[in-house]
Image (cartoon, rainbow, N blue to C red; front, side, top):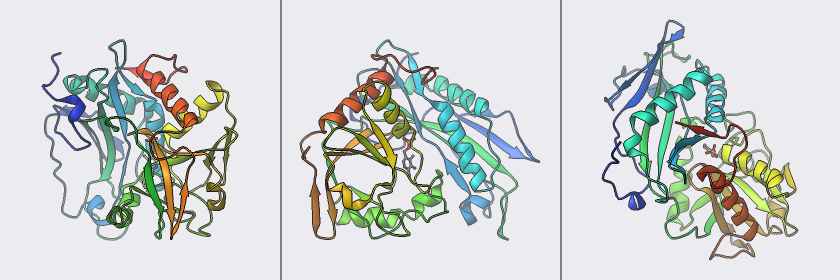
Length: 340
Ligand SMILES: *Cc1c(COP(=O)(O)O)cnc(C)c1O
């Protein structure tokens, strides 16, 4: 299929309407078969559950072209099961894992001409989501839902190399103990908007959220998990019931242990120990790893030895190995790469 005439290396991270999207509706206790449609709009009741009580959960993954020209997605089964976990917590019906993967394949196939070519750094971002559609005014879960998957091409996350960012320790909390921090729900993002706008106004790239109960432990940023590297080359990542289980972070932990022979500690990380780490990075689907050069904490600065010019050496190894696995230049573990 002929590719769209797009300047792939220079598109940003914004919504661009593509050809078709997948839509399935849930009614009378079951999902319908779903269809591909060119209709990019959603028509729902003014009183829909999603609009009144924010009953919506989502996922994010990417389709891209490998070095051998195949169009693939990375570990979509984990997105499918995480979406189910998110649904359960918000009293929403789950969408079957096999049908989820099928829907992803259908949508990517239908928008093949929007999948950026290998080497551009761009990808086709895939956004699956489920939301309550029928009128809800008394507080209760909706009875009807829509599962929708659209795609939009996005540019390379790092143009001209990954420059380390500066983040601040936020005065706001992201997630309560026993709350919803561990699920991928729009509600976690609505309440983070004021915090991120504030951080940007103050000149910071991101927020580091601490645990809401004691404000002594590192949680995550608004949309990425932390990885730290100790001075003796160990990988440390925070463990908490209120952080979102990032698929990128889980994959990097596997890569660290099984490809690079690094020791990994998944444990509570106290903010007090952060100053002693050698490297820091944020992990998520969009960037894989964004290196952090500096953390600002109420007048004190933590500057990592890796500096503000480039990724730390261990972070770089992790980044190169995982992106190599994704792009097909390094052999992937069984089941990680799903061909469209
Ligand atoms: C999506 C998300 C991440 C990153 O998860 P990936 O599966 O790696 O993309 C991290 N934190 C939050 C809060 C998220 O919503």
